Image 1 (cartoon, rainbow, N blue to C red):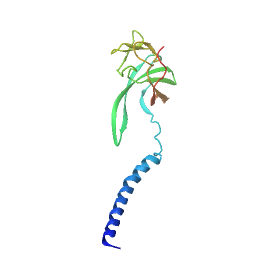
Image 2 (cartoon, rainbow, N blue to C red):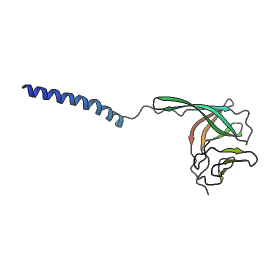
Image 3 (cartoon, helix red, strand yellow):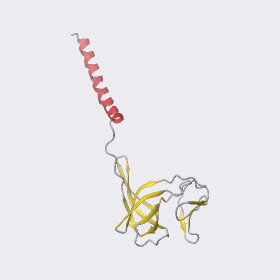
Image 4 (spheres, helix red, strand yellow):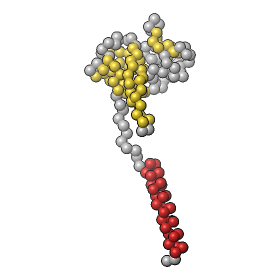
Length: 160
């Protein structure tokens, strides 16, 4: 074997190792299924014993949000409406029109979005305004008088 052939073999071998190291990880990322998906997390949002049936209350709680490798604890709110002793509906705090914060107007018994005049009923349905669909809802569970918030489920019905 000549010296030129030996060095050419070494160079090709090194390039092969580099391609295998980079390409193997890329192929594994594309072809191997990801690890077991995380279960939906249930977060304690507050005590439901002080809620009155049919009257929305804004509950404030903390939740951890994972962004890549960073975990951030953030304060957020939810509008909770108690329908009976075992069921509570929880609405996301953003209007479905442009994501503005809305509020409960007790005198009118409706949710009002002051930015673009969307109006929602106590059940989250669109009453008036440019909002294209009802308020988004969280999955909820009540355990030991504690409201547990699950994943957000956008409503898909269009405004009539």
